Amino acid sequence: MSVMSSPLEFLELLAREAAAVEFEGPLVAARSAGLPADQIAELEQAKTVALRVRALLERRRRRESELLSLYDTVSDLAGLRDLDDVLRAIVHRARHLLGADVAYMTLNDAERGDTYMRVTDGSVSARFQQLRLPMGAGLGGLVAQSGAPYVTANYPQDERFHHTREIDAGVGEEGLVAILGVPLRLGSTSIGVLYAANRSARPFVREEVALLLSLAAHAAVAIDTARLLAETRAALAELSSANTTIRAHSSSVERAAAAHDRMTALVLRGGGVEDVAAAVTEVLGGTLLALDAEGRLLARVGALDEPDRADLVEAVAASRTEGRSVRRGEVWYAAVVAGAENLGALVLHPEGELADADQRILERAALVTALLLLFRRTVAEAEGRVRGELLDDLIARPLRDTEALRSRARRLGVDLDAPHVLVAVDDDAIAATGSARQRVLSWATTYASTRGGLAAARDGRVVLMLPGQDAGGSARAVSRDLSRITGRPVTAGASGPVAGPTSLAVAFREADRCLAALGALGRAGQGASTAELGFVGLLLGTVSGDGDADVSQFLATTIGPVVDYDARRGTALVRTLEAYFGVGGSLARAAELLHVHVNTVTQRLERVGQLLGADWQKPEQALQVQLALRLHRLRTPGG
Image (tube, rainbow, N blue to C red; front, side):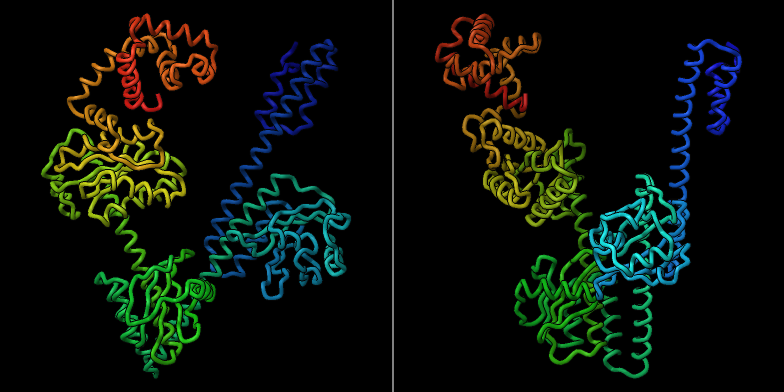
């Protein structure tokens, strides 16, 4: 076979990105040369594979080009500030990216309950450009109502959509046939629809739908950013106008400026929410409450009762929606927000009527309060990290500089030489999602710090060092409160009390083993200390420190040959013994529990007798074997 009739020629065609029609060349040459049928069949197969490779490369090049265009689009949108410019750029890029005849955008009108044509690219019909679509009518109205993308290869003949005379007339005058519409979404809210359309019947493929969805997602953010920027500019313009009015005429606006300056000074010198509340009431008079997002009291000035929870929620929601303070009866509410996060509210009962400038004082106070709460959260998180690092160093071994650890603890208000208990929380409570793990650790940090203790994550556990001497009570309190927080039973093992930095590592291991013991004893979801676990607690105490060798010797003497046999042979003699003793020595029930035949259990127990001696079932030795099995299980949880 010549080179010109070889399958290698298809690789050369792929390498130079030849047109699809050129792949017929080697076959034509082969047939002209009169090559055998099997060789021509081989060339046919090679051509088919080469064309598939060419199509795959072409799709990847097209996808790369689309992603690059999408990246350029996002970059362009990020640089635009005017809303109209943003909308025109979005629609133009949509038409360019999909190679469509027409691209257009409709935005939802909340007041009229419909969606209207906002901007078009490639459109020639004035009637089409002025369309308004009722929710659910036409393809666009259905997308706007459902928030899901829809595509049709031939809209005039597609019966899935509710056709109206006005919509069909506009679409017909524009000459549109194939239409793709995707929602513009901000969170769970649909704000409009982005379309690509052609004047001939043509299906839109899945990749084109995904591409337009990606552009719509970025477009929605850009639209919202432009809107927020416009609102910010409007707010700045309003502030500038207010400042001009302040300097010119209004004593009430002068009070607003003075209050603003005062609250700014409060922030700069490290004031708190209480100081902001006091400043507001000194300027405006009356009484004021500062509440957090859960309605808990942060600060109170004067004798103002806390509002009804339902009234508070409604008023704060209204304040957030309107972007300013709202009045309910004689009381004013200002939402304390940071972005989309609700941080709380200021509730003011003024002595008299509030002018517009006085309302601005309250609103700026809410803004300053949000800033202070964010500062407080940041400081708390930083302090939590410092406290967690200190505890992690304390329970790590070996300790390098105990005096340095004492000095670090004193700076955090912790006396390491006072009695403390160590509480370890089971990893089931923190082994869920990253957000759940962080919530548990955040709760533990706050719980410990408010009691003058420390908390940290260590070896898959959350461990708390709490001042006091009641280890069992501390474990039960942590288990109870954390179970309420996580909505699932939480096991907590505790040890102590201990004093001094050198004793904490041992206490942590003891608390960790107590945690394992609670699971082994079937007490998951409870809290207890080693001292409360009876003989298991004593065994755990013995396992700590130098007693570890004694326990190891006891295990080796009592059931060591069985454990070693399992390790060497991969058998299940230890598990069989546990099942046998667990069902009161019944061979049949043990076999049922192990899912094996009774003869298998008998053979395994005979092997145990060979390893431990013929007297292993006599009461005194059987008791030692059971104790050893329990201790072996506690030392190797999950084994």
